[in-house]
Length: 189
Image (cartoon, rainbow, N blue to C red):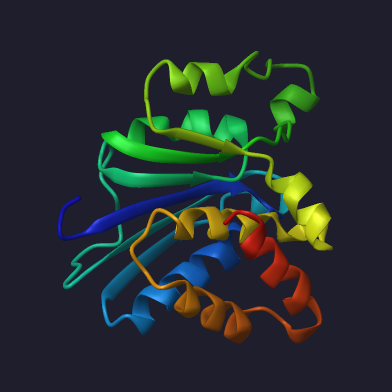
């Protein structure tokens, strides 16, 4: 990887991608690196695409990840993983939550959901990790903690002490959801 690490977080509205990007940027700030974040909410409240670009290193000038330069794509949903795949470096890693959330055109019958998005991604990249984040979140006590399960998975790919991740989660997640979120983070370890 270069001096700047590029992480693209993609999903649909309501999946917690924004919270995930805030935790990630908080973790990076705690280790003393420069971090830039760009969020695109689109139709987030209606289940539309949500994309967050997180770039960090000693000095980062722009929050925008050029196409083909993402070191890691953290995908909260399979179709979003496929949609944003052109941003992944050839030797990058894509971490995918094996969940299907139909976009409005599929719901309305004007488009088809790809038959096997994971197979299509695997045909183009070798570093593909698929996890059932929803199952792990439910087992952790909160079905809405899929985002934190995925952060736990992401943490395994970044050279940042796990204690910093846990500390940042404690500072970011509301107290009443903290226990389930801590379990969710550990579920992907």
